[in-house]
Image (cartoon, rainbow, N blue to C red; front, side, top):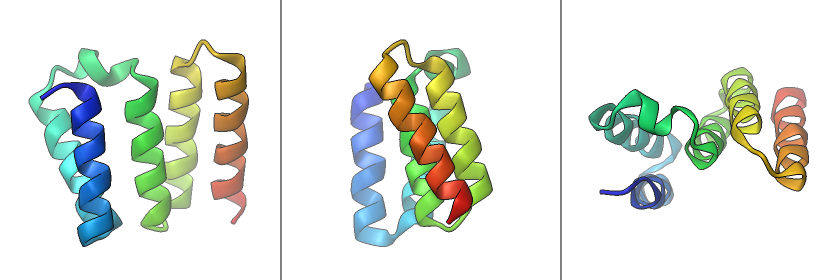
Length: 91
């Protein structure tokens, strides 16, 4: 299963079974992949951040948004991830 399919599956699981289930699905799938394969994948970190935020784990979500931001080379995307990190950390 490719990384994009992994992300979409975990999002679908989160809608069907809740944020914690989606996060568990994402982390389980990530465990099957080499860590280096996902370590620099911006959408892995941003998806994980959104799932953490849905679970109310704001500090962890903010840190994950920062990881995603560090992986992005797109200025607009980096700005958005910076804003999301601030929004979840302050709410």
